Image (tube, rainbow, N blue to C red; front, side):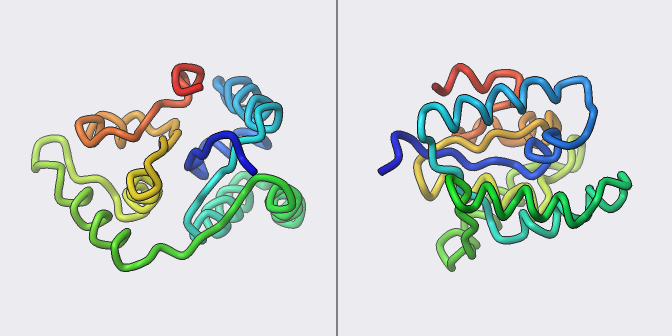
Length: 148
């Protein structure tokens, strides 16, 4: 049994194999997730997003896939979004406005999954966060410790 649930953005997971300025935060988060036995949810599109970024960044797609598979053996649970979740995705996508833009369907899928499961979506995407913070259930990677 898991102690807590989060939804993890693919952009955070990618930091495990990309050398980015905040990769250390993603590593710390994953270490805490393992230590505290936290269940991670992600929509099935997570696999395609991670592998696409690996490919674009010349990281071995095979190694990235193995990383996903290994994590699925423990805490990562990929799910197909259901009808209720899709309705929430549409609502999130329509939450923006012309000046700041509208959340992407992909990002909204993660966020809706968090709302539907009454947990937090952890993302490094400040634009999505700024557009949707009023909906709740979202945290920036830089603030992940606050939800634990």
